[in-house]
Image (cartoon, rainbow, N blue to C red; front, side, top):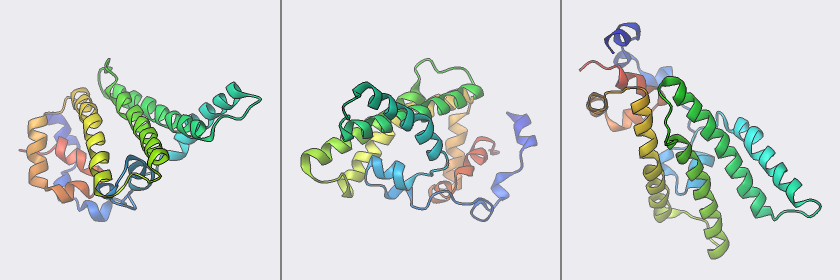
Length: 195
């Protein structure tokens, strides 16, 4: 760990708000549903890749399976959502595997596939109630779901990267909650911070 500290710059001296373009047009903390979180409040850097590599092929497969009849539009939508999140799951799983040992419990994949399930549940809620998930209860729903399925994934990432969780949380506390949320590039300063 000490060698990494010598190789990387001291991120505590970098004004991240000025040096890093902000990827989020809307604050993720303002999302009031899982659909809103992934559609409007999280970055969309790889969204086109996930749609082209996952949603479109899986939807085409469902269309072919129903041929010559047309599949129900809601089934196509749900299939596309699962396809996109499946590609995201594979990409993130492979990325974390490159950093450390393979997670046999596939916690990263479980997280991303659970997001597709949550969006399906939200679509079902809209069909039954006529209303979209939203408001304060929607926000509680969204973040409870994200935290419940996200915590095991983050634990897997920390294990794969051999991160000292205690010193990282101490560094996060020193950095401050709002500054930590301000940019995705804060993580290196937490990992390689000096105590």
